[in-house]
Length: 299
Image (spheres, rainbow, N blue to C red):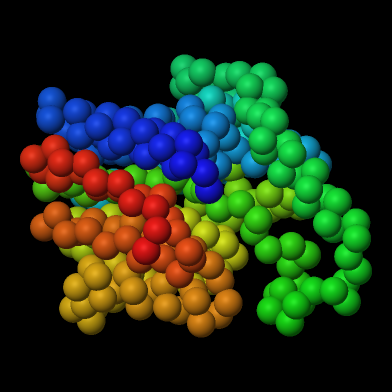
């Protein structure tokens, strides 16, 4: 982290938060605010989503996203797409314009095209920084043998841990009291064979319910899937009466106990926020009802 890079991250996060706030201020829904906010981050090469997506083992950018309406529990997601400029908009289209929840690969791309979303050549997502990151990991892998893995990795049967988090997400509460959550990502650097993480999986990487909270997760996806983290946070609030802060810390602690890394953002129907994580830092920010923007990186 350099001072220049830190300034750049803070600037884009501030722009994203302002976009969501502006949407809410003119009466748009929490879903629209989530989409607007994530659009900004998908268009920035700083984040592992959209334009800044990391590369798979095969040198491709495969994108995942999901979105959920806390009022109706409607949800939509796309996974493994390579030509949709805004995966979060594609996820929203799946929710609103189809009878399905999840679409993947070329089918999702065809649906997005028919829904009028912008389709781009896969080279649109290529960035030098992410390409260099893949080359470094491939070089590291070529110097390893299976016996070099640490115990945690070996037990999981995973060849490499996630070298690049950066999933983007947003949770919002609108003037009608409706919550929404969305998540968008390029996944794991050097991911293999059609791997999909938690981001497009409702209940694992994204969840929203007006009774409890809206949640978006980031981190080592396999652990978030196995712990159904986003839904677990909601369930702890609904069935055990935990506060959003208590529930958020509890689910991150479960991931940590299993050896996983990551964090989440969550917002309840009263406007309470929690953003726990077990890494050195997590790019995160909030905007209050009055429009005050706060951005943080470290603990």
